[in-house]
Image 1: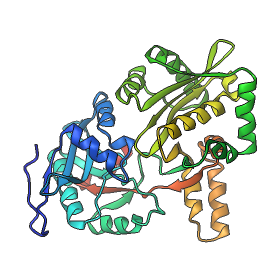
Image 2 (image 1 turned 135 degrees about the vertical axis):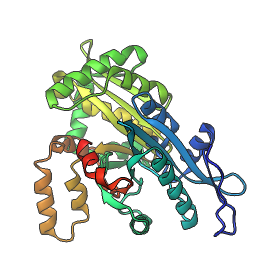
Image 3 (image 1 turned 180 degrees about the horizontal axis):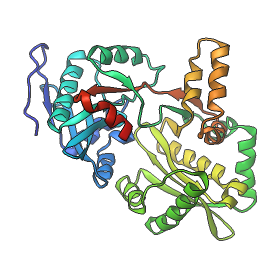
Image 4 (image 1 turned 30 degrees about the vertical axis):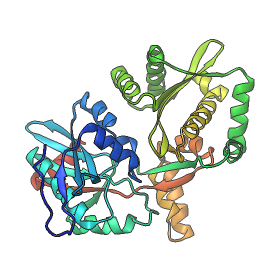
Length: 359
């Protein structure tokens, strides 16, 4: 437990503390920018794979949490890295945020962190984004590359299902219907299907050239987030040809892990799975479906100052390894969005450049 500190500069007493898991998750659930990566389940997932987890929060005199952060710490050679994935969750009051930031920095310093990386979950077009960006710079932090994808596609789920389908591209609608017509069947998987999911992921990773997590990681992720995690399997002629492991928080459905065999790609199974995942997230009351990473140049292009810059950024995106993924995701009718950058507070300057290279 962190010792409570009273902030004398405000009329309302403020205290910095480590909340219970129940109180923390209730705060994340209620916060307008609360997200999956700030939930305690995500911290528990990471704790099983080399990270230490701390929760820090600022509360008022009545015990209500006002701002907070799930902080991940990873140690090596007596030093550590400190990171808040899609956090902190700030308040609107500067005094609250000052107290939280100072507390996070103090914990990171005591853990002998080389640097602290914050990753505020604010989109660039959010009305608060410019204010928080300026405030963080004034606190001595500087912009850095995000660890989570900075650019994504968000599909609005606050619409009738018929409209959601109609907003998909003509090609995607055709692929969804073709998969159904050709006998692709989607079912909800259980723990006994995680081995099949792992095999699909490994085959996809080898074909597409990306790393996959261990079977233990996917199993833990699926277990920790129940019932807000769903394993969807697409089967054709008795064989699993594609699979998605998707999640939901209070605001969004999240497309995090997926793979497909060649037969799954040819049959449109991936399109059908994504459609079913969006329907599931919508049924839970999610406001949008986050299709996760796309080339960041496309996120930058949204705010390009002129057509020439926009065209140049699109040309850059065309050479990005995620361009093929983007073509798949953009067909679901969402909007390209971009988050604020990450922000680093350097604690051991002589080692900072070396730590960045090791990452």
